[in-house]
Amino acid sequence: MARISVLDELGKDYVRAGRARGFSLGAVVIRHVLRNASIPVITIAALEIGNLLAGAVIIETVFAWPGIGQLAIQSIQSRDFLVVQVIVLLISFVYVLTSVLADFVYALVDPRIRLAR
Image (cartoon, rainbow, N blue to C red):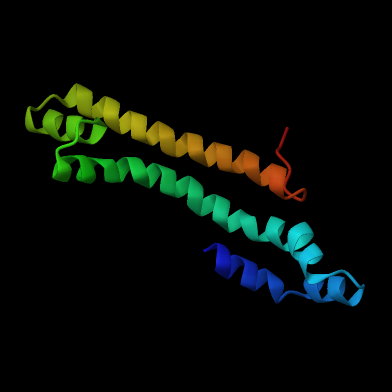
């Protein structure tokens, strides 16, 4: 994803304009391209953190590792729905938290993105 993002940004006009002004390719890449190319990478990273928790259910069940995934499966089998609700709420909270943190990181990386007041 990062490679595709950087290659996409390298084909844009501002990179050619920077090179035409005499900046080295490294300076243009570090100063401009990486900042613009990091937005999709941040989005994917935030979503993947939540997917790691969801994947923990499968991994912990297959390898019989104790953890939140195995607890979820055992709670479903024993019909302890209160514990299942708490686990689902926890995973949902992690998804929302990582999305909010990604929004804050967007504002740090790209100065055109500002948080509403």
